[in-house]
Amino acid sequence: MKISELFNQKTVMSYEIFPPKRSDPIYSVYDTIDRLKDLNPDYISVTYGAGGSMNNQDMIKIAADLKNSLSIESVAHLPCLNISRDDVRNIIRMLHAAEIDNILVLRGDRNKEIRPKRDFKHASDLAAFIRKTGDFNLIGACYPEGHIESRSRAEDIDNLKIKIDSGVSQLITQAFFDNRHFYKFREQALIAGIDVPIQAGIMPVVNSQNIKRLLSLSGVELPKKFKLMIDKYANNAEAMREAGIAYAIDQIVDLIAQGVVGIHLYTMNKPYIAYCINKAIKSLLAA
Ligand code: FAD
Picture 1 (cartoon, rainbow, N blue to C red):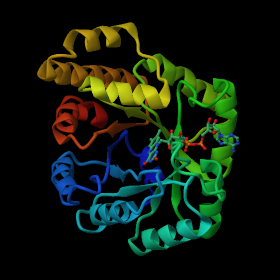
Picture 2: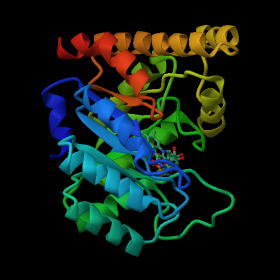
Picture 3: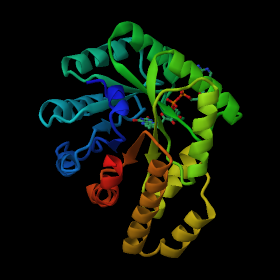
Picture 4: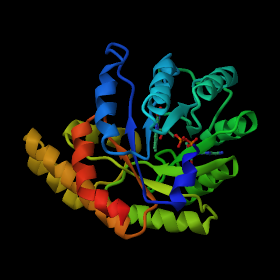
């Protein structure tokens, strides 16, 4: 099923997981999946490291098991910076064979240690290539505060329009901690002619390590109340976790009240956090 069809039926709730590191057994992620299944996800997306490593096999296996063994719609992430057209053709063939209909087309983060292949420069190039090659629902990433490499938000939105015109039919945002960025971005996107569903990506920050990594990659702004929360609870793991969950719930309640079409939860493979958030908001999704 192409998940873009869901948005005119309900407020979509999805969860993102990642394949275990190469050193860990693949089955460790299936405990997470078993517990997410109880939350009735509209879909689960599976990340894929942009290193161009061989972990696409794990990503595809997990996405295929979600779809075919557990009847949960799945989304395969596909970063293109370090792979060739032939690699993409192979991956697409495997996704097609596994009856996976949804791909999150991505450029991927740059890695100084890996020289990018030259076939795809941007996610929009990958979208255009797949659009010609197969019948998939294509999803794209977007950035309420602008992508870290963009000179301005306006430029980033112009580039996003290229991604939509290349075949992307829904978007998921990078995490943000001040909903005002999301509302402003949604409005500016619409003015630029981007009228596809935009799901808000929410990251419950449950330890200070998460936030350091996110900041180094994305440059998102941290509102004062968020910084105060981190400062107060950084040294108390349990309190930090509860505060991070409460902050995410607060964001989601406001987003749903203001008509967001869907929430995408970055679970970081921590099903307890997803469970707490789902419990607090599930009646809002149905209302
Ligand atoms: P692009 O859309 O290519 O944008 C990158 C930069 O290029 C932006 O500054 C943009 O303005 C500019 N640009 C875009 N198109 C054009 C164009 N046609 N011409 C000129 N400039 C252009 N990374 C992973 O490695 N694996 C994952 O599984 C993964 N999952 C993610 C899931 C979500 C929901 C999000 C938000 C991000 C994810 N990422 C993942 C991170 C992502 O790969 C990085 O944010 C990366 O830096 C940009 O990817 P993109 O697809 O947005 O790139």
